[in-house]
Length: 257
Image (cartoon, rainbow, N blue to C red; front, side):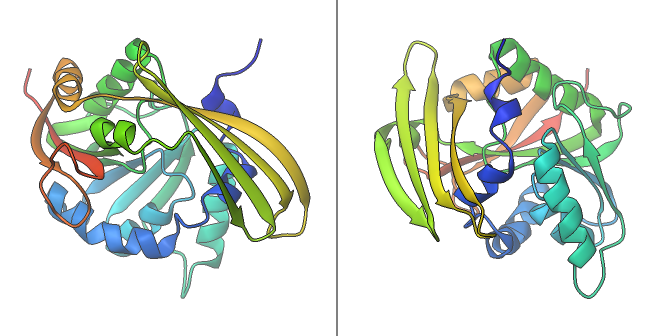
C-alpha cells in the first residue's frame, strides 16, 4: 500500500523544485505576518508546517519563543542545518519538532500565536483537514490567533496552467496540473531530471494535491474548529482579500466555548 502523497513528496527533491521560496521572500513576509497577527515578542509562537524554518528563524531573531513543527524529516534536517550556520549565531528561543498537524504533540493552550504559511493546509480529506484545524485551536491560548496563508481558489482555478516546463540550474522540472471539480482539489505531478545543485544525478516524479476552499466554506470549516475569522488579506502587501487576490490569508481567533 502506497503512502499518502504528503509523506513522500517533501524530500530533498522538493527543495530543488522551490529554490525561490527562500530567506529573502520570508524576510519580506515577516513584518506583514506580525502586523496581521498583532504579535509581539516574547510570546510563544508555533510555526505549523515550518519546512526549512526560514520564517521560524526570523521570528526567533525578533524575540519570539518559536516552535517549528513539520512532518518531513528531510525538511527538518535542512532546518537544523540552517540553525547551525546561522550568522552571527543561532537565534535563541527556537525549537524544532517532528510531528503531524492532525495530532499535535503539545498540551492545550500552549501557544499565543500560530502561523501556517505557503499553502500548508488542505492536504488531507475533509475530516482530517478539520481535525488539523481543531488541533490548532486546541493548542492556542484563549483568544489566541492563527494566520493561515493558502491558495485563493478562484484565482487558482482561473490561472491554472495544465503543463509548465522550467529549468532550475541543471534540473528540468515538468509540472502537470489538473482540476478535480468533484473532489474540489488541484492535483499536480512534478517530474524532475538532471543534476542537483550538489552535482548529483536525479530523476524523480512526485505528486501534490491541495483542497480548494472558497471563502464561505473555509470560514465555516474554521468555525467548526472553534476559530473565528477576524481579518482576510489578499497578500503580504496588506491588501484586502477579493476573488482576484493572489492569496487567501486569514487571521483567526480562538473562540470561547
